[in-house]
Image 1: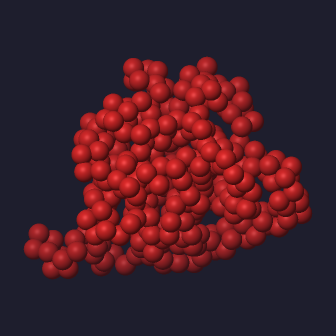
Image 2 (image 1 turned 60 degrees about the vertical axis):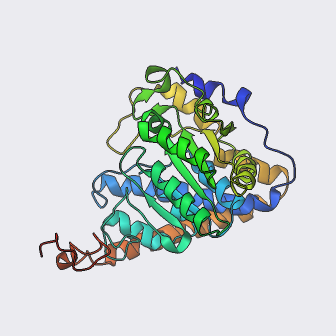
Length: 344
């Protein structure tokens, strides 16, 4: 049986406001299609051992980042956990360099030192995927504090999974965000399972947005399978954040693959997964595009072909790129180049 948090999503989704968002439809479609096909190819390459180590795919959750990007300003900061390929792609990182990072190549966005779980791209204000469960959330608070201190007018949107909310540091972060009235949006990407454990088996609070309210924080539950809903919720939260009013958004979503590439996901039934595939955020968007005649099928096929070409190019780039020079293994560990505790 699917987690009740997912089952309840349609009845507890927060209001998403009004207004025609159709001018974003083609942008969203291209963004989400790129993420989906990039992740599909990453899964294939992982099976070929081209990509190694841990690898967590975003398949099914594309609306959670696509809707946020169009709702925020250029210069706002993003930080997330280790399911992090989609965020830089949505923000405009070159797929060549993201793919090269998955390969561990020197041309990757983290110079081949981060791999799948530690992608950073300062040029598009993506401040990293982080491997420690929940560890990025206090960092997001620190980033928001810096933006407030420097009076930049920017905010930090801080993503986490539903399993991370059981970490004590999350509650310290919520408390500090409210105490200092920081420009921050906390986002829980609730895909129903913390690795293989459903929320009902690990938490007495299954409507996770309520945790924010216990700190006096504005909080809402949002349909994370609807890109329009995500956009509207993040847009509203951003207005508040820039006024020093933090928010917590619980985006109720679903991942179609296992927690990581090593997870067979046998804790879920095929019937459950197929039921949620019928709510595929990309297919839902495609239906809207065609119904509202924003674009026709031929135009969407052209977008799909362009994405296919981008990914083929990214793979070719990664394949032909060099691995990092072993002599640079201690580089980039500390800002101070001659840090005394490093032995070369």
